[in-house]
Image (tube, rainbow, N blue to C red; front, side):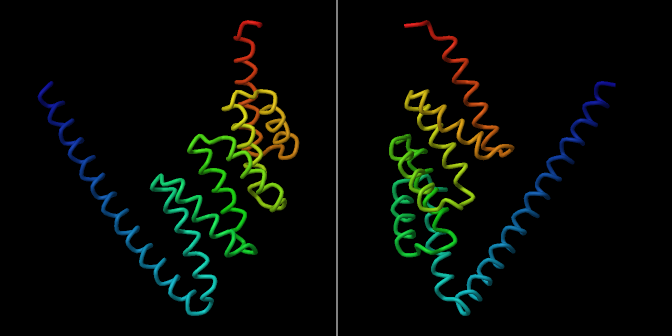
Length: 185
């Protein structure tokens, strides 16, 4: 019985390995096709709207740098983008990524300022709630619990029901638990 079960188990493992390889091959083929489509779309857009293609290319450079964890170079790329394309639909996103890069670098003070720039320059951006949340999280990282609560509560008040509000509530709960656990000074 043990040998039969062992044989069945090995067959199942081999089948799972085969299925995994098959899925990996299919995924690689899909990614290759998507890359080809992306290149074709970029060429088509470049012919029709050369400015838009250049804009997207410059924005993508910043995102590529983030993926490589080259945050300081990404900041420079996004700053250049915001200066070159201040009216772009992606300008607010580029500003957000500047703040996010500083957050990733744990330079929370600079991150707070960059997120505030987004809130002030792009008040209608869909990144405003996330930027305010990140400011609150940054203040928490700096050990400034009261300031953190102020920003986190603003997210809850101004963006109720959003994912950002849920994250803000969770962080406030953690801050309160931490404060309760600390001995009074």
